[in-house]
Image (tube, rainbow, N blue to C red):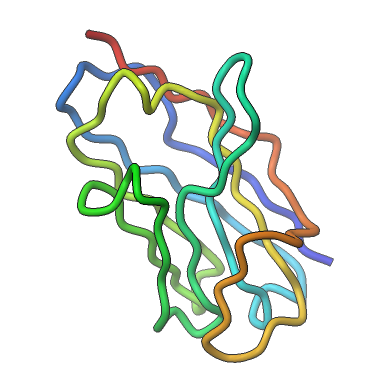
Length: 125
């Protein structure tokens, strides 16, 4: 079981930065790959970034490569998404997700079984 709560969303101008945080509780966090997903109005939910259980392997959607960075602190049970050079197209509800039972170095694109309630990110032009 993993409980997730996101924070850090808000309104920012194009080109600005935001830092999203996800606080996790539960014994499965340490063996879970973690990811950030987003869903814009009228669009499917998509994966933005993922990090392996140990934090050493990261993967990004092409649309955010070079602008977003995911990290995790297993001592503090937190996952962070640093978002720079934000674009209007980044506007969405962002969700933190966990996939339990992954192996070291695994960064899955699907199969996430725990989700936070989401936080709104709005980028204004």
